[in-house]
Length: 130
Image 1 (cartoon, rainbow, N blue to C red):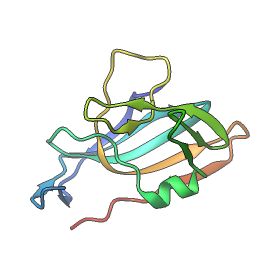
Image 2: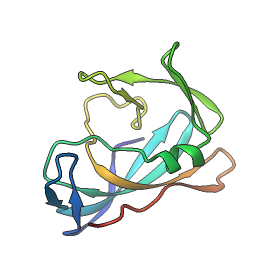
Image 3: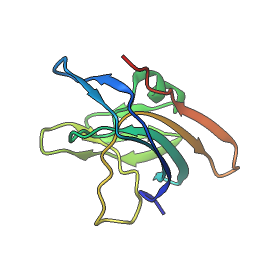
């Protein structure tokens, strides 16, 4: 479970990159994901540059995320999650569970998750085009 593309469609939404340039997405995809024990579907726009899936502050609030920087852990959906570190020193969260040989690199996302009671939770807002 996790990282599997469930559907995709062509897209060309413009997004402003961190450097100020405008990049257009190439497709919109829904991928299966898993954060801790919470199974999720992530709806995101794919851009033709190497970017991680970024979480907005509002999204983290909706997931009731609490960071424990000292122990490199977070609590999301009421569950303690081990944070991983990127090569550039940023925290990241595993969204693909036990599958290892697969990378999921997307940007500007919306995210729908469901807890063990199968109640849908909205976590991420849709990306706002430029």
